[in-house]
Image (cartoon, rainbow, N blue to C red; front, side, top):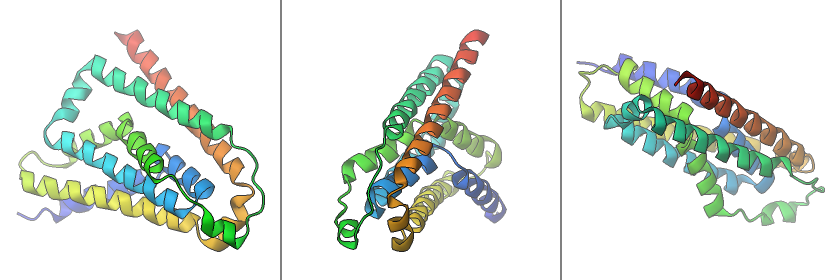
Length: 214
């Protein structure tokens, strides 16, 4: 049996999902424009590693358990929302920056571990990602699809996610663009911070509605 049709459907859905604005897009943009290309790359790698978690629990059916266990789902929803609110609050406090010379551009030293952890936690605590992978592995992928094929899909999703955000980082940090926007990057920080705070508020509102329904 050929699984190319199933794979192409997954790849297309994933492309639209990963390219749409969201928490991952926000943190990659913020770290890339504020701390340089290497920082953005580490955030992208953190996000890709976070995808491994979603793929792993989807393969063993834990995603369905999370979705069908109200208190667990709600806990993840609140924790994820509060974390997004926290990093959004930090970003919105960004201070104005001065024009940067070529030497200063080359001298930017990103905090690799922090950037990686931010990407990993942002993606790992994203309950929307949980629902996305639950949908993929329970409705798009046929039940009779062998585990080995599903594992292959998972590997593709991890690599494709990492590749997209690495490309986004590379694009945002082209020297000619990066040097020009550096002095205005605090506005990018603030805009992304506001977006994360609004997303946090939206998730908390969804949690409140879930509580009301119980």
